[in-house]
Length: 145
Image (tube, rainbow, N blue to C red):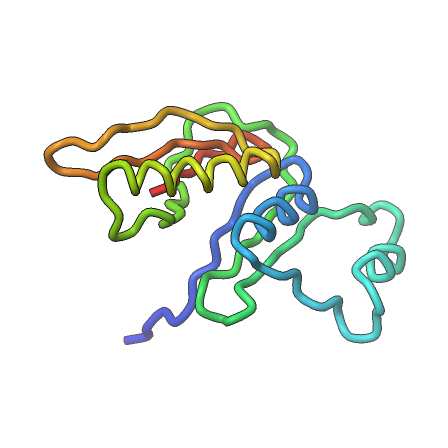
């Protein structure tokens, strides 16, 4: 039986390049090099027929090769309902109480400066530590955990 070796996470979005740049800054990811024979992605785009020009997709990847590749594809419809899948950014792992809240708030401030939107803080309870809901620049939900 085949075994899956890699995972790619795909985002539907209106502006693939913009969303890719946001997530690259959030995660420290990098854009892949342009296709062979092209100095830049813009050069590649200009080589396409006019009806196919314009960024229909973008991607970014963990430079260490450990994290999953993120792929962003343009779709005509906007986001309508809550995501069924979301990313948890593990910034508070091993931290509890006020120390965890401080780590979540510091990362939240950094991400808001990049264009993210702060959501609801879910305080710790008997089973879970605190986490903070957020949205990226196109409204996709993610959590600081």
